Length: 413
Image 1 (cartoon, rainbow, N blue to C red):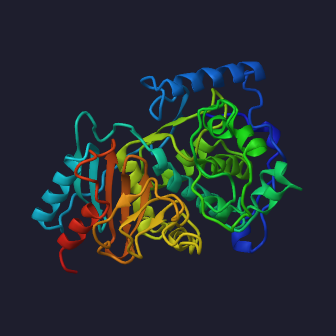
Image 2 (image 1 turned 90 degrees about the vertical axis):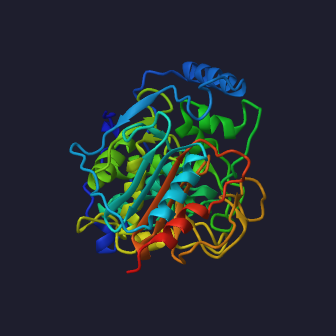
Image 3 (image 1 turned 180 degrees about the vertical axis):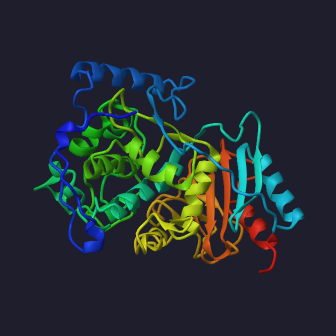
């Protein structure tokens, strides 16, 4: 699927990152141009979506994406070689823990080999898994690819170089690093029953891109505070499209998934021919999410080729002063805190239980709603994935069980 970006007049961009100069900003682009959806039709569609969402009808929530577009992956998928190296009793215990937790998939990769690959219920190796916030590390990786290609100069480049509508406003101070690290100063995530709430309109409106750019409020000084917000994640699609002149779904398919041999899937568009959501809402097989983590475990290289700039993965894994557990699109395992989650550390909602410290100091993780997690341990070249629905409330999900069982079951080097 390819959408027209003729109005971009994309300049030829040299590898600005390597040359140490700023990439040229693109001109302001009507994100919903030539889609055939009028303002009146768009508002009517939003009201219909909102009413359905508030009724909590089947298919009205995270699984109810009413416009999906294809995301192409590799044309020649090849499985990882099978391997061992984890004690059978440890692997069996981890598999059993995943199985009782409403999981759809449990995968373990170590040292270049697939140690365990288990699917539950009707899920198969090619079944699309709803990413929820597993989409956020993918979006961050997409930014790294754009940097490697010279379209973005650095993580500290202003978003307004591409979202030119922000020029001359307080939002002009927001950097790419702050957006990826949830420190943009934009309104935190929340819930509302008001159809006029920007929280609902930025999620459900068929012109959600315009809502994000024009209406989503700045409530804190950029860089001063960590606050989780899906708006940050969804801004990445706009950044990529403005920076590269390529539809986000095409960039992700060609420049990320295909480069790591991953299968593709589908992504939620705000309307046909419109803008995709990048902060959530891509559907890929579980093994494709695992490959994203493998890329990071290998410091941004794949089969000897560097796909992400030198130091980019380190930047992803580095927390900010505002949240010691939040990097860029990923979360950091240490230091140990019994209850913590993706929200501001001062807040209590959305926290996950950790019965003990993670058994590797360098562990970091993807963290999606429903306790969908991908643990990455570069020092042991280890990736452990669990996708699925929310685990039962009792016994409480323990975020440390799966990686610690596997880490302690690894054969000695």
